[in-house]
Amino acid sequence: MKEFHCGSLVPGCDWHTRHPEEAEVMRRAVEHMRETHGESTIRETMVEAIRSRIETKRDAA
Ligand SMILES: [Zn+2]
Image (cartoon, rainbow, N blue to C red; front, side, top):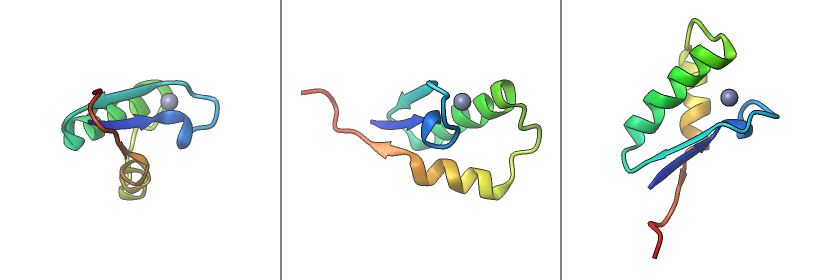
């Protein structure tokens, strides 16, 4: 399971998402940046910043 917490990138934001596929987590995170934080242009540096903050969680036992 991959997990991304927006607060690790945008202090104070409590939005987070999780999905088994990193690509889906990336897609949702980019969408969230656009819709919530007004990032109309998602630069490669932003993509890298998100990717570096995606955590891998063990599936619940
Ligand atoms: Zn956010």
